[in-house]
Amino acid sequence: MKFFVDTADVTEIRDLAEKGLLDGVTTNPSLIAKTGRNFLETIREICALVPGPVSAEVSSTDAETMIAEGRKLARIAENVTVKVPLTWDGLKACRTLANEGTMVNVTLCFSANQALLAAKAGASFVSPFVGRLDDIGEDGMGLIRDIRQIYDNYPDFGTEILAASLRSPHHVTEAALAGADVSTIPPSIMKMLVNHPLTEKGLATFVSDWAKTGQTILNDDDLRTV
Image 1 (cartoon, rainbow, N blue to C red):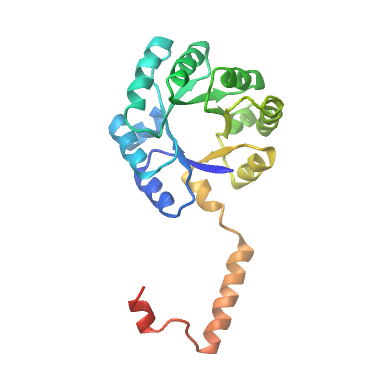
Image 2: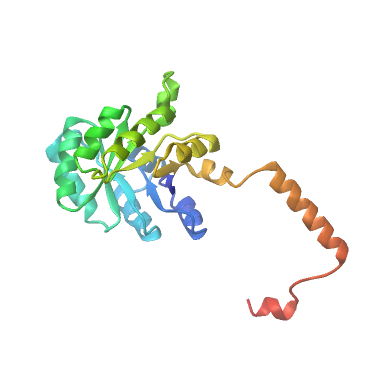
């Protein structure tokens, strides 16, 4: 499963990208507004940091303007993925932009039928919002499983399932088990994935036992050659 980070914080993105585990980024106008930075400049900087897809969302709701905005966003960098809402106008924009060779992420997906339409429209990604469905008493992860089964029934579909609105490490595990192609995760949750108390306990024991030996693996000469 691919890992995308869901943020517009360039510092966070740079830190995660340097670890070599980041496959892409998702943003939206709300996330960029929180940074107080210029929208287009921020997208350009993120695209330079991450070689994988960077979702940049249109701000309009009618197809004609979405297409124009999408074309402008796509010119920023080759890895821009234009994000459009799962509406009739959004699907029309998706089809036009996809036909022009632009990656498109159809967002705000809350049903399997919507995901089916996104695939028919040529979306590169569809973004089902797991947490928001859970909030209203529906089974967010069940939607991921349903979409996976539908897409697997039709091998010609090239749309990847991008599990969004993930709010815990458990959500990430469940998304992987359900067959999501991508999970987009807030930085705080992504950093939690590595944590486990038994790992920390085991490491503390190893460090203590090694210290008792009085030995070192590297000497000063070794460090100077690093």
